[in-house]
Length: 175
Image (cartoon, rainbow, N blue to C red; front, side, top):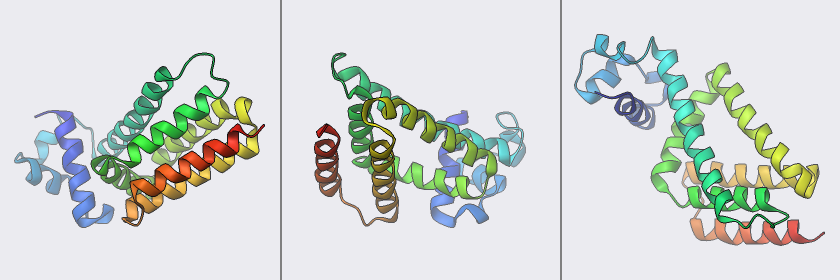
């Protein structure tokens, strides 16, 4: 049994039953172990929920970093383009959208998880603001947040996201 299997099981339970029905017993049942066996990997349910949060943040940041490396160093909007392309890539991944949806349920019920995501948000703004200014950086952030929300609710299509990202790139490229 690996930590990641328990995190994956927590994601499945949240998706099936909601965050308020999440229990270590349900997670143990999902992976076929006893509840006490979970404590080998996690101190408690809160520790498992934070592991889910950090897993989701890690996936998000890794994708943005991969896109950043693909962009030429002389691109004046390198962070902006990485942010847009990374988010677009993730919005095309239906499994990752499910992971983010589960993570968002943790976020709204957990102040520590909220603080983690707030830090991610602020780091992205700090990277983009020198390239395009605070207003355009805020515009990109809230536009992408809206696309994520729509994707998690099942009302947003990848083709629409690509068109919006292309338009946002046009906006930020206008001096």
